[in-house]
Length: 394
Image (cartoon, rainbow, N blue to C red):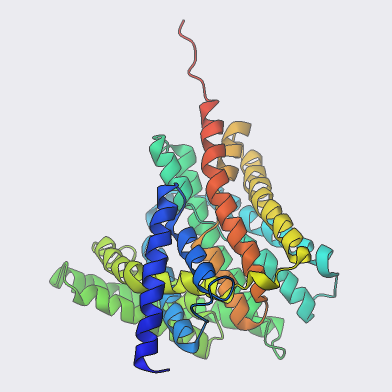
């Protein structure tokens, strides 16, 4: 691919992504939805201006690593410790129920098979996509209502963070089984070994960065070295532990999340992601989705996928909340708050495509789930919170 073609592709992607991203924001939808739609429009599904290429996939790979590094940086370790057991139980239920129901959904449409088979792994991967939670829409809605810092808002935020951690572990294990020679003990051993390795590296690295942060506060060398750490851990995870590279990037972010300058690092990463790598990644999702091949069967599956995706989070998270002693209305708030899907679901789906566990046509299902949950969640949350009535005076 020559330089002029590269420039043409990047110019089209950046302009289309930003135009449709801003258009989405105007109608109160996440910008990421607009960027995905931009990829659909300029890709083979509609105008055919661009095709997915090795270059764009390489750019998208950098984009997804930076996104997961930023997600790790925004993980609040202190909040995780403060909420403790309850948020962990809710998060586990919010992963387990969608995983099981998503797996069953796929097999109901395309046939049941024995555990360990290729067909069974594809079914489990559909469930894995449904485990992800993105609370950016929930956060904005709760902030508008002044409910972000109350007990329910804090529980939702903490459970969502833990949910993502568990979801990434599930993704790592499922992709590990994609190797036909993989054995269950080997996959689990490599995964556990990587997290032990990351813990040791994390302790040493954190103290080095803490010293640098005090000596050179608010300097660009800190974000640059942080980004290098993300790439190093992503490489080591994939090359030596057979673990998803995004897991390494996420852990790099978590290691640095307690630094005084973690917000500064995050802002610098967001500039790179917002300007170029993020739009390329989200547009690449649209470019890889060819809705021309989506027959009626895929369309019906997509509708069922959206319904199961929305209900499974409510069933899992609300059910766990009730079991923990929350009131019915508060349990419903938690379930609704955990219902949104976003970047992580796309990242998981993209990983499934690369591993051969997901066909391109099923990106349509994931995109529909993101759009539906982004629209429905704020509406339902506001309705549920509107039912809270002040007690009548004396």
